[in-house]
Image (cartoon, rainbow, N blue to C red):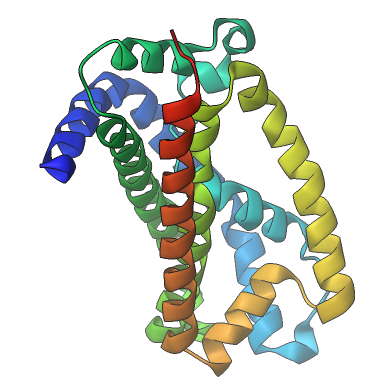
Length: 247
């Protein structure tokens, strides 16, 4: 009953996001198309070390920052307008739901379901666009299994961090919603530089190497990490919705 009710609520709410979700799909296609050549260079670096170079910054930033963002309808009004800092539309929506006889667990689960549906859709669009853009070159360097493993690794990462989006949307405020991306940019930039200094390769390049050397087991590990991360964020959101005063 819990899952059924949460699914019903999530499906009804997604109907109101058809246009923003459509624009998010178009933006995802554009981003994926723009990074395709950079990804090809990174794949070449990983598979042909003699041709390697240090141009990892852009592709690492895109994958580390963008792939978890595919769990949000990022072309919707609250993300595009600074008015959300004052108006805090997500909190207003939750205040409305809290005024109805809907259990907290259903509200929290419906947010997580919306996140997972959005992430699934936009990730399919993202990786399909890359695959189509590089269809004549991609599999010169990777087998289908190796490429599939690479995609699953990043899906696991996206699921692990994607649960943070509904928590920020409904568990914090409009101010945090707009300030957090700047903080994330700084933290991830530091992490990317530190990773390169320690490992000697970019993050995306390293995940390609993992796909080549270990294969499907590493993808399964990342997916398990993603599930655990998603569950933790869901529990944190449930607790936050129970304690935050929206009324």
